[in-house]
Image (cartoon, rainbow over all chains, first blue to last red; front, top):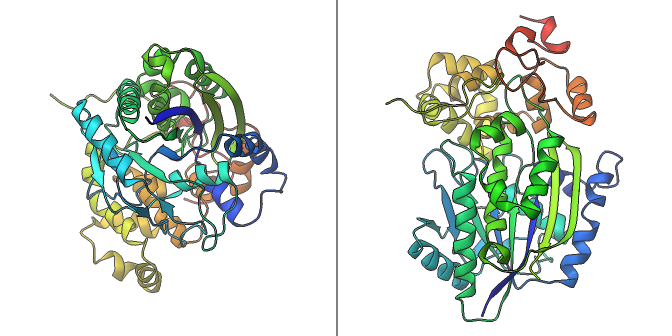
Length: 288
Length: 146
């Protein structure tokens, strides 16, 4: 049977991808950001997943105002890396896992979450920056990401966006879906985006270290409390784009303790301000 | 019953909700078109002519020509869509975000390096934080013009 062994949480700031693509990781500005991911890069080599279920949001890339799915699961064999306005990032294309993805879609929809099924979709920095952070630089042509990825896009751009509670419950349904898949697969679930940031208006640049660190504390040891945070608190405390943090609750909801298992082991915790406009947060939790 | 909007009392912030999205539909779809290289080239060659191909309001076109992102957002623009204009102009996301505050690029960058903008005084309209209407524009860039 397939099982979720760990969850990884990380910001997906586009400038981090640009810093890697342009060879700036050793500049003083960026050094502390990448130092925070050294542990994770080694950890993932030692804990190689067979598949990554990667929760992220599309930033007006694959989805314009033509179509705004609240939850979209990628069931394609592969995904092109998007041109976000200055050419695609020089990273390998993303290979999917259509069989597991279709199984999860069926199981989760039958658990009353109405997912949109996507068979053609370019993936933007929301998905590729976390892969780059955990797997390092990869040659776009000769290289390859070490394992298949199931993209799971959440609408956090146009309101109404799903509540933290809805995301947390969805994570629980995803765990059940994975565990009902016959093949013996080691699956990681990643929650990405955040932490505090605001990209618009006179309040642009807002950062709230206290809120972010309290969120990390709750996410680790009291996810029920984190799931209870209403939208308005994210907006007021963590900036209008801080709402992306609801996506972390999908990954957290899929961990074993939420279904009565043992609390996860905190393998790594990192927080840094700033990367461009954003506070960077990163956690690794292992099911024990 | 009108839409519940508990976010209207947050200063310096426009939530991109269904109403804003309807207002900004063509503005945002125009922005989306800039993801194609040939459209970027056509827009750059004659901005006004390219904008006239879209069912945008005259004011939306003026806001784009002025590269005034706060104005674009008031008219229904969303920052992730508007960012395509910035990319077309070769601007970073930090330059775009900073442009909405009235700060110079350097002032904004320094604010971020020093830990970003504090939430103190910036949670509710009527407090005294630096994002409040009575304290705009911030920094020195916005004080020169207009």
